[in-house]
Length: 322
Image (cartoon, rainbow, N blue to C red; front, top):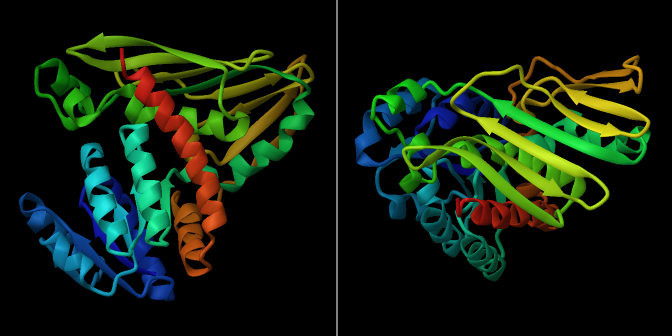
């Protein structure tokens, strides 16, 4: 994979040690970083620290190189334009969550990717983890599922500044910020990936300064119900549960970090403890799989993942009408 990284924010700084390791292994042949002029200094420091192949301030110039893939880690509102331009240039695109802000944008990008015979994938790490795959395989052991409760309450480091009137993009409605887009997107991906499209859904947000700082999504699957709860304005022990008539599955960490779960019977007795924690970078499963998918041209898997992305995008677009 010949990669162009778009952005120099927190997620890029998080994943760069992994990408540098993949470069040393030969999984990534070349790796450039693109940044807007306001972030040039930080991009050059990252380039030097991780021995990247160069910094670009001109996106068109980057697309004219021999890269075959872009990793779009820019603010949410920029995903569509930068991804579309990459696809039109014949580049594969790995796009950070949320992949787009509207269903129409996502459909345009899917059509563009198909037209230019390139792949587009949303960087939603949970779908690639061994623990999440094991949850899927374990569901029949629970008996008929009745209640699903996925939770992610994480007090934001930017919340105090937000209360004082200093609005960061994570709390800016014009930048598609808020608890739904930033945190509950993981819960929704996890639920939709396991159970598919719900019959109905709704959102009850806590609103401050025109943005949802926390909120609850309810999903109706007729014979069972699901709740997805996320907060950036408070902290709580994070755990998610899938309760069936025979047993309950409990995940003791946020879904974007899923690496273990337990199964207990109706009396609370431990039936199974599944622990997949390894001393690896938390994003390694998805990026090694991205490299394989692109190398082997696995369009079938990319399409399956985009079906989940489209359902979640459609739901969040509707839910954001709060």
